[in-house]
Image (cartoon, rainbow, N blue to C red):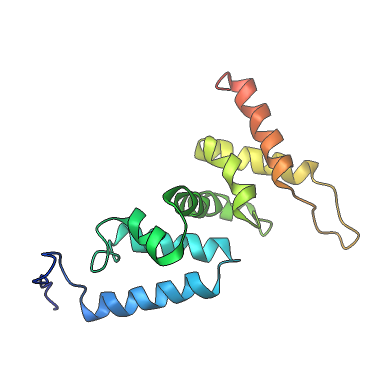
Length: 153
């Protein structure tokens, strides 16, 4: 069992060897996978929830700004996208491909996210190869319709 020590200079707890190693692996995921929104969001979520930034930064927001050059809004969009994508996993193998497709869905409750995504899949035109042409605009339109019909828009 490892213990958490406190640094003399800052008075903040140091990371254990295991936490430091995990932070390095998670940061590698972010660095090499900036295009892979799901992996980036999951890594950011674990860093935030585990406070793995604490040895170098007082807040998750300052960690994101200093280490990656983006603000909390950008980070939290990716984290929320992880939750949306996880909610949609049981629906099959066609999932949002990027954060922009997930963003409108975050305005809905979980069950409504699935309903909206099913509508998106039904409305999305097919490409010549049979894949669906899903756009962020289509997702936004479907979400807006659901919000309007439920009286929450």
